[in-house]
Length: 146
Image (tube, rainbow, N blue to C red; front, side):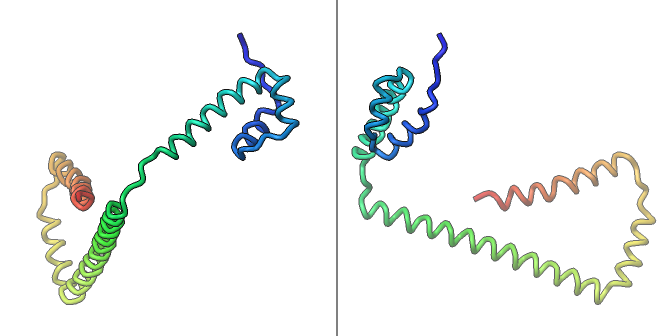
């Protein structure tokens, strides 16, 4: 059994949402089975929604005040955490720049010596690659923990 669709169903739903059915729509509902069924179901759902809203418990002012303060505290903690992260990133950048400025040539010479002395093998490369992937991921997870 296929349900026949009516072109005026959207108009009916709009009128039900506004809460006012005009004479023309009421006459159409009486003559159209599809719209009659839609009106019955939609009006029942809208009545149930209105009743649920009317019966919903209103929280106490103290409870609402506590929730607002708790949300403000969480927001302030998030902003402070973000500011600390920015400060740490800036401090680390400045430290790296200072090390490179003061010890740049010595560090480059020592780094070249260390790199030349390393015998690269497949297991060593895999361990280095894995650590390069896992260390930032572990840092991100640690930061995201509350």
